[in-house]
Length: 418
Image (cartoon, rainbow, N blue to C red):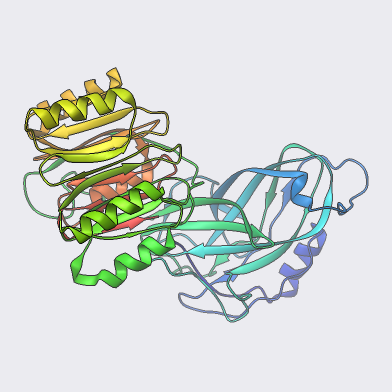
């Protein structure tokens, strides 16, 4: 989801690029909110002669981290890589790579896609087709080497506004790594969200690496639904995604398990209300319809709990399954979870904010939506900010440990990054 276009036309900048071994890059002129480029640098000990491997150079290169900093036109660092970025001072968003390399490679053409918060890609007049920009880079042998590529922005600022952007690095039509970076406004976010009412937020967040696949088909379809909105869904860090609108309208990606696809079609044809669903890349899935009907491939203990709630006539409101097999279930009378820490968090959420409406658990974190607030632990920082920043009360939050999310009011209003 991310940004921009401007200029790198001075001889001084072109010469600076030559001194670090990178070919000068021609970019478009720009002003105002348009984007341009800055120079980049690399560190790490060079051993032997630079050569381009006969095979795919990425067979010998592993990029382990991508961080975004703020630099000026001359490449001076204004905000450290991975630091907090503010819209009023961000000039050039600049990527710094950390990598391991077993065989040196020269003049490797890397392509960049920068996605805005609204899902559009930032481009300039000189952008290559389908990308924001490209750069030729040299990789040296060693571990934990770093490489700073040219930045993208404007020397006078104004290119970036508040929101969450995604920076993707590509080589020959293959995405090597991606990372989200959030741009903040100076004003403080209210602890009760951007809407009025007695509703609170409580919890902890953590840094994260955005390695999730982009679910562009899901986001495009949600946009096409328009006023129909989106009520709930399920997403993974891989290429699996489902979204639900109305009682049983749906869309899904090709990678969704066939059994779940079949049930979505069946319940749509039968006009059953799809209440909730969960899904993992590891093969688990569950769909709930009507009052407490359910189907899926679930951990044994979860199947037993679902069967009991069904027998007892309880309404099943929410289901969630982690990649590691942990799970949670919310009904109109009870809640249950497989992990003791999740049970502790569910108990604390209910005590603080009342009746639990939904829960999403991952390998690392949990989000619990209640009548009077949202309780969360160890979630990605961008998910925390998104939860607080909505103009509606979150009733459903589906997220991944890589920072993708779907947030809805349980009816029509929605927000996403996936």
